[in-house]
Image 1 (cartoon, rainbow, N blue to C red):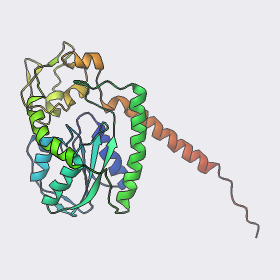
Image 2: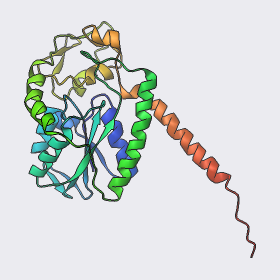
Image 3: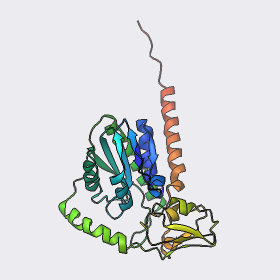
Image 4: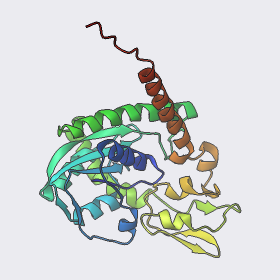
Amino acid sequence: MVLYFSATGNTQFIATELAEKLGDECVDLLDRIKRSDLSEIRSEKPFIVCAPVYVCEMPRFLSKYLKRLKLSGNRKVYFIANSAGYSGITGYLAKRLFRKKKMEYMGHTEIIMPRNYFLGRYPPQTSDEIKKRLLSACDRLDETANLIKRGERLRGRHIFMFEKLITIPFNPVWTKYKMPTKDFFATDKCVSCGKCEKLCPMNNISIRDKKPVWGNSCSHCMACVGNCPADAIEYGSATKEKGKYSFRKYKHFLNERKHGEAEKSFSVKKNIPKRRNNG
């Protein structure tokens, strides 16, 4: 069973693609996290947990939820990190988390996807760069699915001690003091649909006077910015200058690629010459 949390669609893509390739179930944890629903999840197949990387770790609200969630049935678990290029100590922390749950950790790997976070120093990516990353991710997903099918362990990069020494104390301080919400605002394009409120994993958004209002508990996941159907949510001047990202804007690109490959495969099979019987 594939379990995942996704903000702007990258991790959802990874999870649903893996589930399709493995013929497995796929469960979005968002509603369960929002409602603090800790009801048991059971799977006869190995668990596969897919998560984004925030400040060199998986989101802290997600790791807290997984620590308390009861997983029963199969005791094997794989971990897939969706990163913009550096997964930090995510794999190490996932290994520690699942071993404490008395599960057999089958390793982790990193799928590099387009960056959805442009705040601060991060530069925007061009459409071509995004498409190149998506195509590379598709190849990596094929490799990962084949390893899991064969029951093999995933081999992530080595995580050095200095990374742990820096990240473990740094992450909680950064997430507490360096993720302000005061710069979020909705423009006059807002249609009061409430989607941002529904998608916030930390229940940090409420609708008042037909406009979203942000509280102080924010993970900067960018779900509100990237998924607004009216493109009405901004973060200071950063999103106006650098743009925004949502996987749905590129979904058609991957669908066309899949369709093209399917047609090509069908054409090749169709044109295979029949073998003559010379006997």
